[in-house]
Amino acid sequence: MILSVKNLTVHYGPIQALRGVSLDVAQGEIIALLGANGAGKTSTLNAIMGLIPASGGEIALNGETIGGLPPETIVRRGMTLTPEGRQVFSDLTVEENLLLGAFSKRPRSAFAAAKREEVLTLFPLLRERLTQAAGTLSGGEQQQLAIARSLMSDPAVLMLDEPSLGLAPQIVDRIFELIAELRQRGLTILLVEQNVEQSLEIADRAYVLANGSVVLSGRGADLLQTTGVERTYLGRRG
Ligand code: ATP
Image (tube, rainbow, N blue to C red; front, side):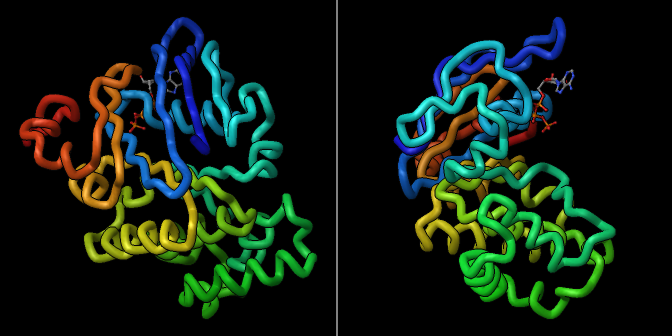
């Protein structure tokens, strides 16, 4: 397994947000992490990335423990997170945002220049907007910039927190196409989404969280056939 999480627990003061989450991600897989609001999806990604402390459990990347390491070290080891709400630096240009993503690789190195070219080939619209302030991009463009910035660190594992949130349907389709394209390029992806159907279509496997625990897991295609998944676990009418 490229990423292995065992019995992860997270507390926010007296509130226990994760109650022993275990999940495995194999090289080249797209894994969807689904669940209703407040189920613990963002807490799971943030704890894996070292952005919030875990109160228990084990996290291993490529067989090595990363629990307790700072996020920048985890980025250097080949994993990165595109956070919920995109969080691009609005006042900085598209180019500057991309360069910040390459912090772990020395932004002025030949490697970063080559990565920039690769990323701009994948996101041609960003190339047209390199000098534009990121805050003036549309929501879909900002999401693409956020993913592009993550890719600048040359990750092996990319975690995406609700990349389709708040975007128009055609833009959402484009984001899902991009995720499939990234996998074809060899990335391993852990995808948090509320867009259940599209996520299960694209995912090899999925985990469903409820109240901080994994309540269901299986192949994406099988869960897609399971009636009532949305109604039972995701607080929606299925
Ligand atoms: P959403 O889709 O709404 O982001 P989620 O599945 O990502 O939901 P989390 O954001 O991980 O869920 O939240 C899990 C639980 O932890 C929720 O009950 C939430 O209220 C609580 N929680 C999250 N962040 C904090 C915080 N900073 N302080 C206190 N409680 C928090």
